[in-house]
Amino acid sequence: MAIDAGTGSVRAVIFDTRGNQVGCSQREWKHKEDPRYPGSMDFDWTANWALTCACTRDALTETGVRASQIAAVSTTCMREGIVLYDAAGKEIWACANVDARSGKEVRQLKQISPELEKEIYLESGQTFALSALPRLLWVKNKFPGLYYKAARIGMFNDWIIHRLSGTLIVEPSNGSTTGLFNLQTRTWDKNIARYCGLRDDIFPEVRECGTVAAKVSRSGAEESGLEEGTPLVIGGGDCQLGSIGVGVTGVNEAAVFGGSFWQYEYNTGTGKTSPRCDVRVNCHAVDNVWQYEALAFKPGLVMRWYRDAFCGEETRLAAERRTDPYALMDKAARKIPAGSYGMLCAFSGVMNFISWRHAAPTFTNFDLDPGRFNKYTFYRAIMENTALVTLGNLRLVEQVTGNRPEKIVFAGGASKSALWPQILADVLGIPVEVPVVREATALGAALLAGKGIGLYPDIQEAARTLVKIEERFIPDEANGKVYRQAYDTWQAVYEPLLKLSDEKITRYMWSAPGL
Image: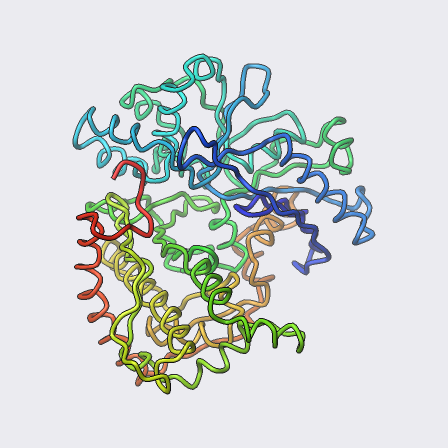
């Protein structure tokens, strides 16, 4: 069983030993903003634990699988979310992944030294944009009593195992996103905490992914429906486990995960960081492998907005025909030529981790010609913009590593599109492979569970054996030529758009805390 604590939902997924999904139970959850603290994203551990246990129980009931048949459980989650515990192991504070309440604290950290963020990045691969550092400083500033009561810090995948067993162990793939890890040693670096004026005595044990952390306790069994004594195997962050779930486990392999955000993940054999501090570096969930990560902001959310705002007719027809409205929109958008008649849109820029912000959303360079510039042209332009951002991110990583992958494995909700994978291949100029299991994070957790109990002696070989490719998209050279020109034009357009937001004439689509 894999338990996946995502941004928008939690689910329990059961797989057989050949990697086939047997069943899944899912519950949506929301992370509320505290009205006193704009940008906050609180995590309700009591309500969310009840939802987690409902998923584990329902997954067993709905599949008819007995608790005694679950050989092992592993966990995965949204990254960056953190939990603070008291000395008795009780949760006392938690926030979800893109909590942005700590802008003042980012500025406070930068006042320590103008070079502090860069120095931390070169050591940890993280900036203040998503790390735990400003959030911990926020707790210290706002709730000093709670701050000094805290005895341990952990992530959400660790939290699930802790609730099931009473044992708290952090692993490198998610732990490294805190900004408190040394990439080379793959464990806590207390010096970073000291430099930031934070405590250095709240760090639990670190073990590598795929090792047994504990076993389900009696109380954990009573709450979850799992059997007491079931092995609990250390999992990892969602993108790292997703990479395992699509077979991207070796050096110089890469994946793109197309969901609410698009992550480009590139595997390396070193934890080397970028001198420009522009790309994120994390520990992979595979031993002695690291990942460069570059994100495109909100493509999945943009597409959902566009569908709901402008494609009501397709949604109605899809309901009648029992199909997906995106499938109808894809079919119509295929008739639009590559480059969308020269129209461009901007919803996200190429990643710049040390100064991470995105210009106001924009459509531009279209004529008042409904024959060419209809809603399907705009729809295709959104797809093309996302692929262009991914190209920029690929080039960013290539500048640091000197390498680019021979192919891209494309997974997540966007990979279900009949059109988007081809656009991605055409833009990148690299073959794109779509696996059979596209929601791969849970499968990666299941493979780690199997490794932990000796079912799979080598996680890389297990992934290569069990991950199946459903379709391969070959780049179209003619389309690629169009897109290379479009990329140059888009970059020239985006720079002044970002300047307008910098000058507060337009609103950023998103900016990191403290900018």
